[in-house]
Length: 72
Length: 471
Image (tube, rainbow over all chains, first blue to last red; front, top):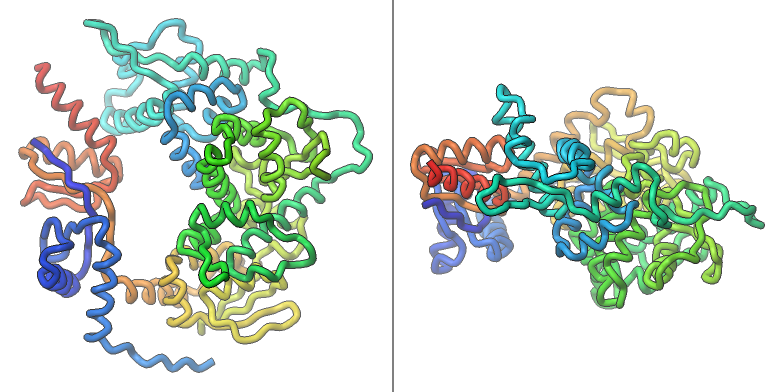
């Protein structure tokens, strides 16, 4: 019997997806509904904004921004 | 179908059947919906059914589809029928044992016939006043009035509230409340700050903007003791009026009389004063249900732009080194550019600045997308730039996109995950979803797929299950 689950499909690089899975496990599986493959996940709709914010915070620590010359 | 009318269509589809039925008693509403909101095939079906005395059997409709294009045609028919059914224009009449048949809503059919043949005694298309007005109101004046009113609203949204542009045109408190109810702006520390929805709104085409605002207006009509049907049918009536012609206010309902004030504020209609017994629709009104460009959308109505002077022609020049020069004196345009550009200098007729990673990413954090920025720059490109193909330097376009991708590393699509199919059903349903264009992701190994919209899919699954049981 077919069934439908409401959610948000997340498509990202494998590396980013790995970080998302890590965030989820740290937060007691609060986000992910279904782990589909290396680059795809389904997460809860209401939690998307929070997940994006957490990802941003994580990336801030790991990736250094290239310096902008900023000359006019 | 343009973006703006699909917005209105979505709103209509969400209305309860009773409200829709009341609306259809107005010939102007029936005509506007028929003309502007229905998909082409739906129009054909409605036209064919209009003068049918009896319900139309579903099997006959199937005969109209060419067998060699069945799959494609079925999809379009399903789409057309689902729109018509959700609008309650067509109802399915199924007698016991009898075959499935469709019939057209009586009110809708009657109104549409009246609208097409000019029959019936109604004032649904407005009552024109033909006697000479003491002060002639010209089309140029109406255009100017509409533009000033609308730009004032936009300028207010960009966040420079308090300093009114060019004299004493200020927007009423009612409009301000409406903008904040619609979530276009919010109050922070006594200052008006534009929201993400507001940005999206700002970069839309004028016609789409008008509809967005009017839909917020409609949604709030009941709280203001206004009848939704009255409001809607008045809007559809406005869409069918003629620019530059005066219309009488005498035959309007109380709700509609009240609306005149608000619409006057938006610049959709013009009245000399509150007591005036006549009103003039502006171009914003007459283009509500038509494809013609509303007055400020430079790209779609070039003639209009020519008439209304240099202001609304393209004014932006971008060089390959990301420098941007904008020949404009309009505070609104400068404010919009300031959303995603680092402006550095302002001259009497020119502002200059630069697109930087920082400025673009700031805009993206507000909720503006790179595509919106690119399309804004393209439509407002200076005539000199429009001579070249492509209009914008490719390096700049690519870089704007790259800056956006850098910001968001994951793509999110809300929708539904479909699982638990057997092999045949999986192939069948996922192909159907792909043909509809709602398939986002699928995995053959897991026999599951993800769709962005589910209504038609679930109907399709139900249909195919019924078919199986019948066998």
